Each structure stands twice: as structure tokens, then as C-alpha cells.
Amino acid sequence: MNERSVVDSDGLVACLSGADAHHVRAKEIWRHLGDSDGAVLVPKFSLIEAVKAIQQSTNPPDRGRSMAIVVGQYLRGLEDSGCIRIVNPTPVEEKRPGRFLTRLK
Image (cartoon, helix red, strand yellow):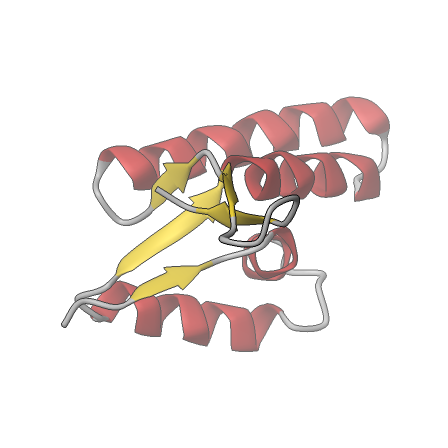
């Protein structure tokens, strides 16, 4: 059975930013996910949040903008190579009217 793992913006920032307190552990987890047969899903909003967080934490701001572009291109490259899938979450109505969940396709 292929498992699916969802990586959120905190996980992306930790993996991509050497200054993050959880960087080493995040890289270990990322390697483990890459070695598994399962799909690694990255919701588009998590990608945007991660890029924005990296951009805002970099000084000077112009360097942050450049860094955000590089990170975005890197993640797109991972998607193109099949390492991750960037997905658009879609709201789905639950069986109880008025209740919504999010499904990742």
C-alpha cells in the first residue's frame, strides 16, 4: 500500500532554512519520505506560506525576495522530478450538512 504524507509550511521552512531550529531533523524526515514508496503531497497554500516566511525572515528584504524565488523554483523542480506533488486542496461537504472537510487530490 502506498502511503501519502502531507508536508506543511513549517516542515518546508525547517527543511529549507539552515537557520531553523528543526533543520537537521526535518532533513532526516525529508530523506525518509524520499526513500519511501508513498506520495509526498504539498498543499499549494503551504508552499506559498513557506516561501513567504523565508522571504520575510531574510535580511535585507531584496535578498529575501531572491531567496523566495530560488526556493519556489527548487520545489517546482522536486515536483517535476516526481519527488513531491503540489496539490490544490478542495473543500468537500461532509455527510452532515454545513460541515466541510478538505480533501487533497
